[in-house]
Amino acid sequence: MAFSTEAVFREDAYLRETEANVVGVNDRGGVILDRTIFYATSGGQPGDTGALIRNDGSRIAVSATITGETKDEIIHVPALDQARPEIGERLKLAIDWPRRHLLMRMHAACHLLTVVCPYPITGAAVSEDDSRVDFDLPDAGFTKEDVTAQLMELVRANHPICTRWISDDELAANANLVKSKNVRPPSGTGQIRLVCIGDNGSIDSQPCGGTHVAGTAEIGDIHIGKIEKKGRENRRFRIRFGAMPAI
Ligand SMILES: [Zn+2]
Image 1 (spheres, protein in one colour):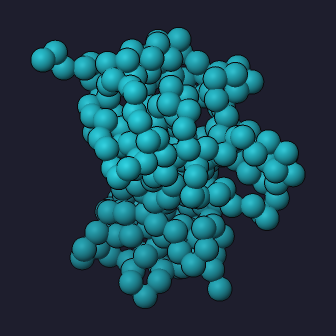
Image 2 (cartoon, helix red, strand yellow):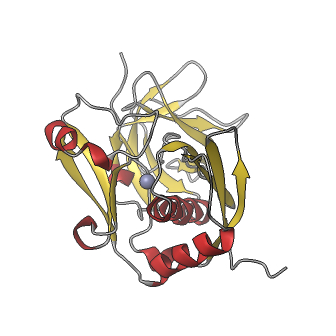
Image 3 (cartoon, protein in one colour):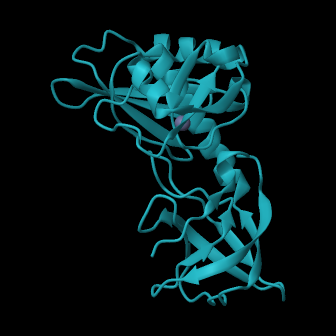
């Protein structure tokens, strides 16, 4: 039977450390806790890395975080040759915060890109230094300079980013909230998490389970590194940190 881990990062993406109890260790050494601040890989955002710290101060390095049999079961994958904790053991949890914060900034930047380019999304991948969003977009008609300028306008305006939960019925009544072409948000669980940018979601609202910064200014300088043609109907936009390099 799958465990259900309390996903603390969903309510507080800024929590860097907490404590939790070990509820399971799977046959590959994966550690399952009753609650966690480690984000599990999904929705294009990679899972957290960090450490589980035992009572004696020794550290179990976590090299990846993934979901298990169900989306609610979060598995902390130890690096090679790490000790395995005991079931029932209390551990301190510490995520690699500098890496997570980069991912939160990048993930929020991807949302802004979907505001500037309001087309169906066919894929996305967030990483610490370079992220991509693919759009169903036959003819770009965009320059990376224009898109960068519009992104930075949204960044500088420092719009708040927050989450709220809506029901399946509310989502069904607002089908335009879903920008992803191929991936539908999970329905049937009763509740969908919306990520809203701007007061009352005035800039954007879309279903997302990832971690984001609390305001757009925290994203900092970003630019479009490349707009690539991926097939007849797809354009891939790459977002990078920093100001656009002068050529
Ligand atoms: Zn998101």
